[in-house]
Structure formats: C-alpha cells, structure tokens
Image (cartoon, rainbow, N blue to C red; front, side):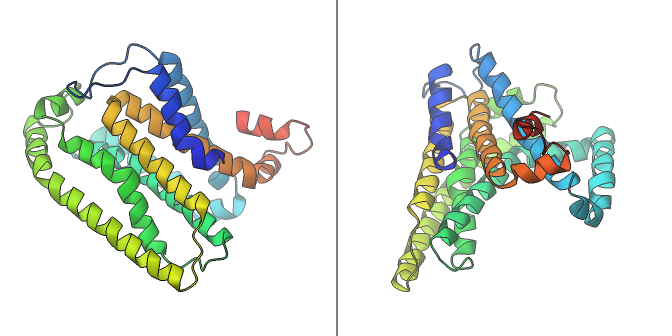
Length: 276
C-alpha cells in the first residue's frame, strides 16, 4: 500500500509545506519555506542511494563479477567530469533526464511484480509497460522544459557552465517538439490500451495494484509540473522514489543486509543496518 500511495502522499506533503506556483509565474521561483522538507528529502534520497550501493558492493558474488565497473569506472568518471567541460555539459543534461527516467523504470518494475502476482506470464506486455511508465512519469518533465523560456534556462545555469548559444538553441528547438511529443504519447497510450484489451481477452488478469500505482504516479507527475517550482518538483519526485525503494528493500532484503554487516544478532539490527 505504501508503494502504491507514495506518489500521492508525496504530493500531500509537498503541497502542504511549499507554496504552489501560479500559472503566470516562473518555475524558478526560489522557495523560502520548507528547508526542513528539503533536508529530509535529501536524507531519504541519499539513504536509498547508499542502500543500493550496499546491495551491490557488499555482495561478494556481485562485486567479484563487476570489480572493474565498481572500482575503476567511478574514478575515471570523476576525472572526466573534472577535466573536460564537454563531458561535464553532457553529464549535466544526462543527469537531468536520468533522474526521472530511472524513477520510471522503478515504477515499471513494481508494476511487473504486481502483474506477476496475479499469475500472468511475466513476458506479456513487458515492453509496452516499460514505455508506458516512461510516458506517464518521464514525459511530463520533458514537456515542462518545452514551456521554459531561454531566460529561464539561462537562469538555471547560474555558474555559466553551458555556452549561451547552446541554451538558446535548446529553447528554440524545445517549443517545436512539444506537439509531436504529446501526439506521440497519446497515440502510444491508445495503442497500449488496445493491446491490453486483447491480452484480457486471452486470459490476462489486470492487477488493481498495478493500475493504482500507474494512476498515482501519473497524477503526481502532473501535479508536480503543473503546480510546483523546480525545487518542489525535485523534492516531490525524489521523495516518493526513495520511499518506494527503501520500502521494497526493507521488505525483501533487510535480513541479507543485516548478515552482510554482521548485525543479525542485534534485536534492532535491521534499523541499525539502514541507519548505517
């Protein structure tokens, strides 16, 4: 229930603690309130990042298979970001889009789990679900950028990392891709529903939890880009994403993580593990 409702709960928390952005206002309005909310949002975000790190790097079998990837790639990446401005520019754009994209993939994973629990073939509708999650959770944030002016994009680059001409070109191109993105997304949603009607006729069982998760995620994304500033959007989306991830790891892997840290004998070993 927490996983399904997390996006809507995040909307309630952020909506009651941060002022909504008016339609005529910029997305770059500085938030003077809610510093505690931003703090705890960062705590949860880094907690879920560190849990992911622990799941991979503290697993001897996984670490052995990907030793070079775990040890060498981060060092090379940090050096490249420090020494190359083009790499830094690319990484900035990539991080902006990846933040929401990987959240969409997490939603996709939960949806597939709910579908499998209904006894469905795990391969049926897999690709459709992946792209559907991208549309309901990632595309709204892409569309937000198409509504931003060149001045707003320039203000985002407070340290002047990006060439001004690049920002100008991005703003000019963005407004022309808005309609194709919307049309393509609506077309895919229609195709998605059409295909699932066929699956149901063939015996596929619809999961209410999966439908509720997708609906709550889309409503959260819609509220975020419509009513919040960029700061509020970042807090909201990272808040529910982190809570969902922490919840599923707590349910499925807390004992494994306890054992890896040799805390299985403690009464409150699970809480200590996540605290560490």
